Length: 243
Image (cartoon, rainbow, N blue to C red; front, side):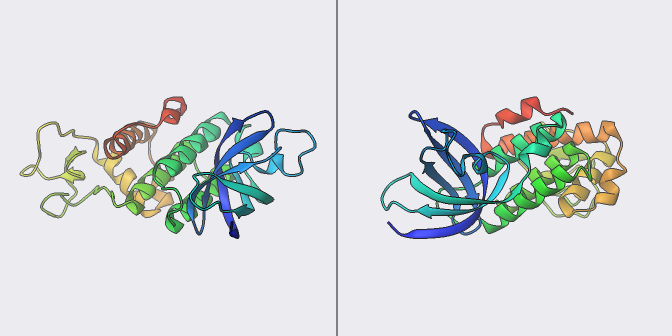
């Protein structure tokens, strides 16, 4: 059973037996990892509180060859965002959606360094309160989709490449489409909405922070629909997010 150390974010926990938990991490070197933490539900546990969702940890794991579940043997907290986020409902629900998306867009024991770095940076930004929680969530989702190979276009036509901006948006086509390429079922969001989403994808926070609420709401709907199209199933956490 080889021993390895890694940095990771706790995505989810599930009780196992009377005192154990299954912890799902997104790690820097090994992608999504599921491991059993023995005895963490006992009050005497030395590191149970370190293995809660939203916690960024340095973790030591015994890797059990041929098994889905490994074994956590040590964990040290590097940053704990849960305490800050639970005190702010919009930030907490946005954070839950980020954790769920990160889990869905990663694979067991397959390195996903960019996805990991996006999540760490996204949670740090969310906890800081520097930007509106909904904007941070949508920026994270768009960039995560881009890392996974599903980057949407918000200006040039996703089909023919004709320079935009264009009026129409189509999920299967991959984003903005010109009037000549527009498939049936395309929608026509406000130009300001597409500009906002483009800014979130590019990291232009000046433009994003100055956006109007109505364009943020419309943009969030497009992001959720685009995410569901590619995941083939929506995120349960998104139903709780305040828009």
